[in-house]
Length: 277
Image 1: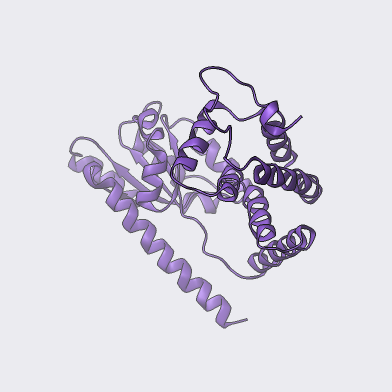
Image 2: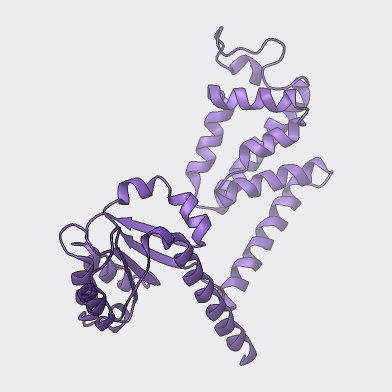
């Protein structure tokens, strides 16, 4: 049974002329290539779920939204190989690996040679990253009564700020989270908190962090903010705790500036490390 015949058909989803692309023969060759790559890929990685997902795509057909995207791409003149590569390409490195294999094979290279050389290239890059110091991604723990809302803006905020952000709505579990992060060596670079959060105030949280016995935790950079104006007493307490005050209306720009400063300092450290080796 052909790939086209295996696809589920209904009045709502069936294409008028061709299910996937006009050249069914070329599509079949590409699909056979993917099937050949999958077992090799599964042997090289633990991401078996990726291979399983692609297998299901090939055997049971695509979901309606993907079919519509394919049809739209064909209408714009996108080539069959580019479409298949796009289907495979995603956030998982393995998907990009398979897509690269398909592309290079389409240029006349042996699929086994392509796959092996790509694997070796990735291994060399991995070893290089392990040996050489690298710039770490800036991490922010953000405690805010509006955390639920901010969570929906995470991707946008992370791009604007240039950092990975974890949001918390309440302050009661912050120390516990920091302690677990310290065990895994994944502590945030800064903690930023609303003054008026649930379970514990921002000032109370700052005090608990500063009094923590673990030096890695008590030395964290702390930033506090408020929707309203802070009193002179609150500002003085924050200063005593070594917590900087940032304005709520400019918080994104402030965090971006902090991240850029951190990045510059980290790159300087990496440069010094390379110079001494």
